[in-house]
Image 1: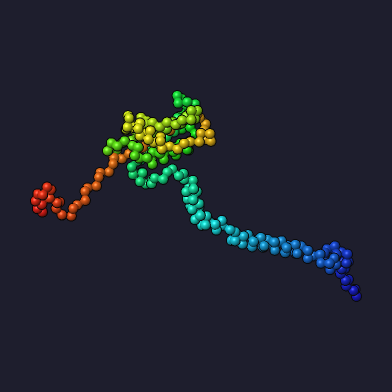
Image 2 (image 1 turned 90 degrees about the horizontal axis):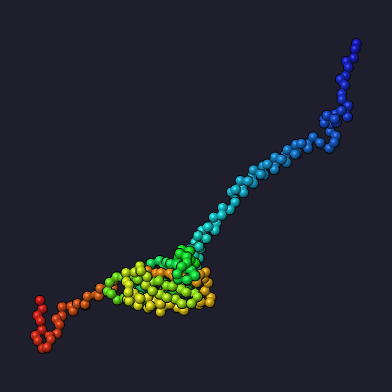
Length: 241
């Protein structure tokens, strides 16, 4: 009777080479741990991105406050930058004279030639002075009883340090009456600081058209309320109608 042969088993070194044996301190768990770490990192990324997008500041927190503050700041800067051009009530003066836009006519080395007005640099002092003098001295205009206009031309000569005001050709009032009004406006100008004033050219001219409405008709005499006037020279008092 033959005895069945037992199957041969692999030796322990062979098992270790195949990774089946228990030696080596759990080396088969290492790939699993690496995958678990990667999965946790990916999960944290997917969780952190929505939270960041949800909590991210939109930049509109200060928009409401800034929108309310900017108009006030702009108004304060405009008020502080507005020049004090006179003490006359501007609203009352505007009812008696209408001013056009100040025009820069010419600038150059002399009155005989130079650049056109749109190429000239500004002279803020003289521009403001001319506007103020015309607006605040309405009584300089001729007393004709009807509407009229004068185009006041101001010339500035830095070489001679002189200014001159004369009526231009654009106004409806000309002749001696217009020249008298221009001389009146010139007397209202303040003395310039020639040494401290910046300028590119030696000669400038500018113009301002002023239109003077017709004076308002006088108000009718107040009613006597039905009372008859007193008799004249002892005559009889008139009868009521």
